Amino acid sequence: MKKVTKAAALVLTMAMMVSTLVACGDSADATTDAANTETTASDDAAAETAGTEAEASDTTAMTKTEGVITFGTNAEFPPFEFVASSGVIDQYDGIDMAIAKQIAEENGMTAAVENMEFDSLLIALQNGQIDAAIAGMTVTEERLESVDFSTPYYTATQVMIVKEDSDIASAADMADKKICVVQGYTGEICVKDMGYPYEAFKKGTEAVMELVNGKCDVVVIDSATAQKYISDNEGLKIVEDSAAFESEEYAIAVKKGNTALLDMINKAIEAKLADGTISELGVKYTEETTIE
Ligand code: ARG
Image (cartoon, rainbow, N blue to C red; front, side, top):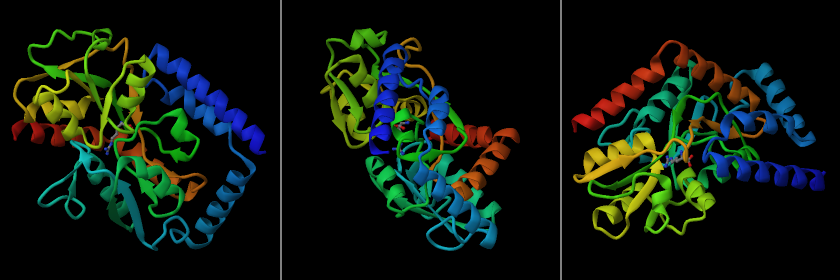
């Protein structure tokens, strides 16, 4: 079993490398299938247990605390999650936080947030510290090996933030430049796959400060967050390169096999995509950031 899993993981990793060489971040569609067929015996058992318990006693089995969905996030990623003086869930605000609150409340539950480093989210899911991770998280093959993802709710792409007078016009122009990324984000994976040296920071704001202070030439980060940073800081612009950075999809992650919670989340996400709630939230939080 272990050998098979390892081999499958290797194949997936290789597949990811190939796809990211051609089109960085373009991983969601192709990978969902691969991951679904990769279900192991223990996953099946876990799924069955979760399903049975959920049928027997409704929402009790799917979360660590009855009646509460504990969402993990990294509130350093506007407009999806950020700390505000008064947010939708405690001090946490943003598109993801609004979605999380609605999912919980529509199912007669409450939403709690645990704010942590982005890198810690998948581990926190696996060890049961959180029930779901909502963090503008891109579905990737590597992440699908350790968690299950919901129906995607947002499409994004990596972009380059540069100074207004920069001569960087495409990803290839980063070749001899100092590149900054955020540790563990898909932007880091893209730059790594392109083979360029880079410096990784803990937070997007730190990478952008480095750019503002002239200590780096370009920050590679997700599009909507980049938009927020250029509206907050004068003298910056966004450069897109859709050939180098293709689309990524954000989804909510749950522990592998927690099908009861995943089904509930999927139903809510699908309804919110269909009735326009998610695009309204997108507009709301994007306009708020522009007005500021
Ligand atoms: N979409 C990117 C990724 O999945 C960045 C997400 C960062 N999210 C956050 N809440 N800090 O890697």
